[in-house]
Length: 568
Image (cartoon, rainbow, N blue to C red; front, side, top):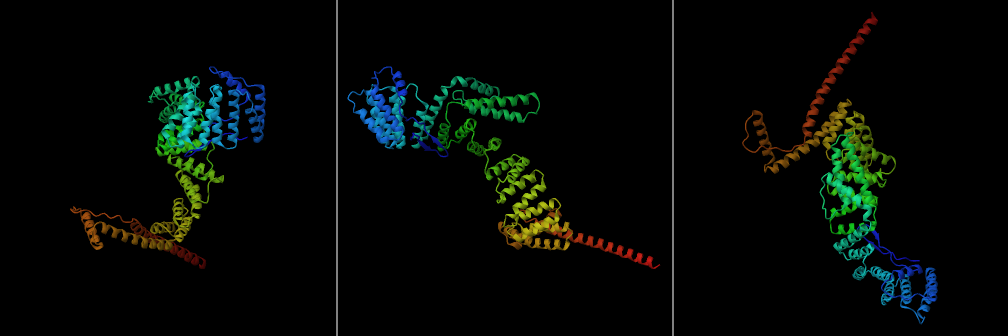
């Protein structure tokens, strides 16, 4: 049997409206008659009651036509009371709803309201159902006016009526009014639960006073206030030495506040109410309020989407420690599932200067097959984390995997430099050759310098000379371009710039004062690096050659002496 469930789409959530519509049972009818105080209501005869019961069974068995026949038979009775007629009309309304004839259903429910001698409970139920059916028809103004009519006649209104009204207002983009309606529903629900939370609220305000956290005494959001006090306590905890009495006391205070917040949140409100409130604040771009509601949602309805959204909100407000704490909670609760989410967690650890935690988490995710290993960016993050954690060998493994996935040679050159740092010069030369072969390098001169240095360390002097010669070619080109750009910025020809630079250099070397503007051009350092390394390499080759000649002479002399001794 179809039940009435109305849906509305929020900007980033789906919330379900309360369900009011149902077939009134005999027990409900009796309760409604008991509630009547000022109106005279005729009793339902046994004959009518049996017919209604038969109609109800048929309708519940989806034998709609037979059920309607039973209802029409009742309406044909000559001596029906207003109360009995209202009950039959209520059933007819329900049948029309099942047939999705919502306007027809409304007309029958309105007939229930026509006679004053009908129980208040049945009238209230009919009015509420009419309001919901108007919402189903997307007639939001009539939904709102129908709810207002109900609220006007009730001394103890139901909170979910305000939610229905607020939902209609949201659909009409009346976001401020939505906030008023939903807030009223929350206030009503929580006020009926006041005794349970009074002491918890006192605990929070007492802690706020003790640690001098300011708040509006006329408008206290206790969960928000408790979280603000916790932030103050955590800051004090960071400045307190572990082990002493104050540190233990602060830890206990934080635990106590966490318990109070959780107990405060376990109230009579529903998750969908807060989602509607959050969506309204989001539409009004009141992000502080969105964040406040997310802080409430994660306490009572801890879900991945709330923790991730809250972390993002903290990021926007540059609350780095809160950002990582929220995302870390999502990780610890097992909410993280996607490759990008684990990479994000690792990056957050890196921003907090916790590279080992970042590397350990991401390495495990890689080993478990969670992280996408076909994306070189993920390997780069892992390599960076291991490097910063001083685990060079592990970092090189990750960087090598990243380099395999790229078409350009940049990562191969990074790998070459890393291998050079750990003394693997053969590996450095191999990676540098691969990088240069792939091409698309930002600095070809620096790439050849790296290769030449590793070849020098591997005693491959001729290869090293060639590498530095290639480095010089690219460095000279870059130097010429830089000089030309400098000349243009100084409004000089290139020749005039070179003359002026040489003149100023000579003046500085002689200690003379330069009265005009001193020209400083940003030239690539690789020119000087190549020049210095080439000179050093030349001297080293001379030294090694001399040493090798001396060794050869000694070996020859020893061989000659040995030969003479044998002859003798």
